[in-house]
Amino acid sequence: MTTEPVTITEDTPVDEIARIMESRSVRRLPVLNGDKIVGIVTDSDFLPAIARLVLNEQSFAQDDENIRSAVVAAITSTPWTPCGLNVSVRDATVTLKGFSISENARQAAVVAAENVPGVKRVENRLSSMADYPAAQEGGDFVSLQEQPSTTDDMPL
Image (cartoon, rainbow, N blue to C red):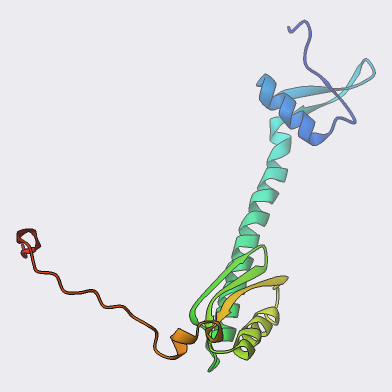
């Protein structure tokens, strides 16, 4: 029998109970009210709470994936779909990335995302092609001069 067992009181917070169990490597803690034992907390008492947390986490992930699919569908079914559209969702916050043809198209994409059920917030990281005049005119590409081939360039 342990001469000085680790105990808790009825008002010990759950996070502290978990810390005590983890740091002392114990699976059961007697609960005291004064000098009288009124109960016991075991590590299995935490299992339902942990299971609920895991299930909620999976539920959030599933909800985020459903939201992402709905946002992509809402935006890609339009004539003003941004180029290189990248949609990510975390905790119902949608992040939009890519290039839109105009400021109006950019705002329309944000409004389309905001109107998807379940979306809490939209982070607009879309760039307007108007911000990049070279992109509208075909760009400005620099050609590299052709260099003579060397022996290590030979095909296998």
